[in-house]
Image (cartoon, rainbow, N blue to C red):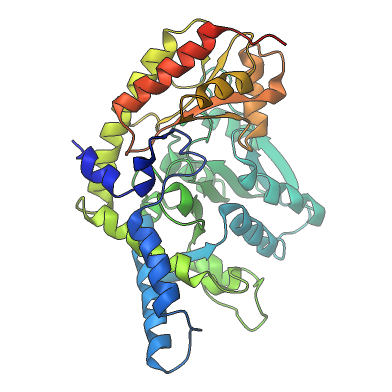
Length: 405
């Protein structure tokens, strides 16, 4: 069991009296992370690569953070870790580099379930002659099924970009199994782990993925994105940096990384070390989040007109603690606005997973599919009392009925 008093004490914002249930959009930040940003800027904010002591110390600090992030992801080498301002930018960089090695007629498969960050950069490669195919989400299970992928794979398939779990539904896909299918077809994988990384241990080398991305600001850290790429694949890519930079992660980091924010990632890793390391920490988080998810699903299922989207089982091996729903005859914005009054942060919209949000809204009979869904997303620092408080506020918003025009 988590010591929630100790956990919550590590996140200063949680003392504000607000309930933060928009964690899939951005988690709260650890004090240990923020303190490292400040400390780096105030004591070692110099350019790297010089021989004097402060420059050497600055390099050592950033290198330690990259090493910690390598362990966090379960990667083999720090040379496989690329850091950038966001996962969207990192995937744009990766796709821009891959454009230099694609041939007309090469095929890339994207999904209907993904955030646009793992769709848009690949769709743009149609401009260099690539053929873009879409792997549809199964309307019965609301998951990406191998049966939907198989007809799309061919000898021309170069890459399949898919999500570990969607930012709307939280259902976990079997990345290792899907990667084997795709590799057997001769293609690479690029996995969006943004929705997964705050909740479960990452093991990218074990899963044998080729590329994997997550957002540090959704894992209790700074506003950064992190991309893992197998070293041999990164070395083979054309550089988008200066033309004399031809190996390693730096070729996908034009302008270099942000030193102070990268150093602060060490605070995240040391927080996890306090639980016994990432494996133990995320096992504890998953157990607690399963209870939170179960309580929320139970409370929402009791409310009139509510359609829960996706997996109804809160089991930790099936889903993470991100839950979306719609209310019959009610605009998502109206429900969320009423909940705002209770100092509870939830959210509505398509969350940049526009194709999936529209499909969910249409399935729920929403009159305006473009309005999206309502999302409640929990983290390990949330409490059962907060879930009940949110459920009561949602119930009140539904019972109150639409406001007069």
